[in-house]
Structures are given as C-alpha cells and as structure tokens.
Image (cartoon, rainbow, N blue to C red):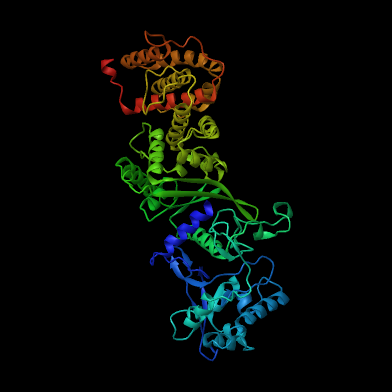
Length: 578
C-alpha cells in the first residue's frame, strides 16, 4: 500500500511539466563544481555553481544520471561523482583504492567512446598533468578539500556534458539484453528485478548515505534460496518511482515534510490540492520566526473552521508517512490514509480540544512543536521523548486519545517548571489529554473541561487547583512584589499529595488575610474560598484533603489552578463594592 501510493504520487508529478521530478534513469543532485573543457579535452576553467542562500552557500541542482548503489564496493556514477572517482585526486581514501575508483570511472566512459562529448572528457582524463592544471584555478582547492561532487561542461555550452543530446540517449536507453523478467509485487507487470533499492535520504538520524525501507541483509530475514531483493520482488521501474517520490518529498526544498520527534513525516494528496501546503503549518517548528509559524497555524485553523475543505466532492485521498532510523534501514513509525475532509475534521477536533482561555500576549493556536517543547526537559526540542511526537500525531489523525505518557509528561513538568512561557501550552495539552480520554471512555462520568473557569466542576483535583491558585493570590496581595510564592515550594506536593500541605497552607492563609488592608478584598477572598471549599445545594464540600491524587486528578488540578489564575487576570477585583 505504501509503495503503491508513492508510485501513484510519482506518476502524478511526472505528468506535471512544472514539477521537476526526475524521469527514470535520472535524479536531482547538487554539483558545486564543474570542470570546463574544450572539445579537445583541454582545461578551460573550474566553475563554481554555488550561490549564497541566506548565510550559507548552496550548489546548483542538476538532473544527473542516476547514482549507483554502493556501500563498500567500487561503482562509479556516469559522468559525475566525487573528486576521487572523477580525477583520481587522493583525499580521504587510500591512494591504491582511489586509483581503482578513477580507473573504473574512465572504463565506464570508454564503453561509450565515439560519442563526441564523452570523447572530450576522456581526452581530458588522459592528460598526465590534469591535476596540476586544475590546481591553477582557485575554485579547485575548495572542490578537492571537500571531495565534492563534480562533472564536466564543454566550453560554450549552457549545460554539463550529461545533458548532451547523445549522452542523454545513452542514459535513457540502457542495455537490457539478457535481463530476467519477473512479476513486480506492486505493479503486477513483468520487469527486471531490483536487487538493491535506492537509499532514502533526508530521514533525520540516518547516515548521510541514506537508508532503505526495503532491504534484506541477514539470512534469517530471507526466504529459502533467495537473497536481497528477490525475497520481495519489486520491478526496477516501481523501485525507481517510489524511491524518487520519497526522496523528492524528503528533499531540502520540500514543504511536504516535517520532523515529528525522532521521526520524519512526509505527506501528499492523491491529486494536487492546497491542503498539501497548509498541512505543514500544523506541526512544523521554526525557531528563527515562530510568529510567522503561529500565523500559519491560525490560518489553517481558520480555513478548517470556514469549511474550506468540506467541499472536497471527489474525496481526495491524503497520505501521511512517518519514518524513523533503524541502523542502516528506515522503519515505518506510522502510516495514515484518509480523505482530506476526514483529516480536516480530525484537525478541527484537535484544535477544539486544545482551546483554553489565555492572556492577550499569546496566540490562540500553537504548532505542535511549541506544545511538545513545553513538556520537554529544559524546554529543548532534543529532549522531547523520542516516540511521543509520533504517538501524538497518530492520535490527532485518528481522532484518538492522546498517549498517557503525554499527560504524565505535562503534569510532571508543571511540578518542576513554573515558567510562564510554558504554562499556557502545557495547560492546552493537559486539557486536550483529559477531554479526548473522556470522550472515548468515561466510566466515572467525568464532565469535559471547559475553555475557562468552571465553577460547577466538582472534581476534587480541579477544586484543589482553584483553591491553591486562590491561596497564592492571597499571599501575593498580602506581600506586594514578592519574588517567590507558594507555587514555587508547594505545587508538586499540593497537586499529588494534598493532605501533606493544604492544612499548613490554610493556616498560612489566615496570616496573609490579616495583612491585607483592603477589607473589600478580604471579603472577596473569603467568599471565594467558601465557594470552593464548602458544600452548597448542588455540590458537595471538601470534607478532607485526600492523601493522593490520581494522574487524571493531577491534570484536573493543573487546569483548575490555571483557570482560576486566568480568571483573576481577566477581571480586576472591584474591592470597593465587595
């Protein structure tokens, strides 16, 4: 299913003349340097294709003959490769091996001697002083020092030699004589079998050389008498299409990829659709410009709220693939398929679950990256638990409860970190965790959490959170400008083992109230404490402080505390009329 969907995506892009996706036998590759020669093979220049992009140089991208699958063996690319292969310049490799690599590079070209452009390259490579001649050009030092990918260009021609018409004909017409054809498991057509699939590059955590999602490299994984790709026959055409599609989605300039914890996610639609670009704003993090990102998330929310995707009459399919590194291979972390309308509905529910009251200085909607950072140690992206982001993503797309580990992380960080920077996003997550859990299964008939203060919520955790926020506010009014409050010292114990601290806090409250000179303010707080603690006609009182709170009730405590604080901030107490 995954490979077929990627093949379909390749076919869709191949039919779009503006997509720039590579045709079979070719691939996109950045070549920082080109050796410019004349028709006789004489060196003319070393051309640097790099241009400044932001603060870094970026090499020009070319459509080059498809690279060879190589690990430890010697397998030269056709008319382009690194400096060691192309001109035999010894860099990181041993001199003897570099000589073998360069010899193999020339021998591959000699198979097509008689093609004018290739003959010119062979003439240059035959020059015994070619390395000394190259050193006369300033750009060559950078090329040699970095073992960069290089190729050749004939003087006066706009493109490298591999874009010569006769050379392109060679690449487009490979010699298939004597190739054994087998049925491809994906397409069902007869095709040459792919022994080693092209590496997938761009998945975070994998080697620079990439990894494979289809591979067999130890006997226990192989069927009897079969090796490598023969265990799951995939035709060369299918293998090229799916690997090219996936590498395109993972490319440097792709807007259809994002990091999700330790996983890398790509997504695409069954046909061209604006949702492909809009979807990225849900998660993607941009430390350089977080405000722009937040605006993009808000725009996505508004589009969904306005029903922009509800009228997708053709039920366009949307695919989401999450991948993570696994040694030299790539493992599939998650795979989700649905219509764009279904995806939009799931995201709308997600936004609704996150909605919570906040101050004027923060935005309504935050990308998931900003939310997850709030539950990570030291507020660092690299400290987000590896599997957490992928599990959360699955929950969002499937409209499922969030993993218990997310609630646990949010509650734990609330006890340790009282930074106002993370209080709001953490409250959003805790509210969403609890509401999604209750929506699926609610044996205790818990009421869902509101966006703002809910005076009718009788949950013990929620009421204790409100009580703690009120006691803190009393302390602050009694000691204007105080640097540390009961939040700093007692929040962890109050939210998990209330009986150990609330008795002392209630006695301390009496001392604080006695210091407040404004009696209207004192009366207001006493009324509020009575509302929270004591029994009324429609709700029970707090008869005793519990010894322990469950994880869910600790989450309720956090929301009760947050709601009550926001209620204090949202309206100034009219002390003159209390």
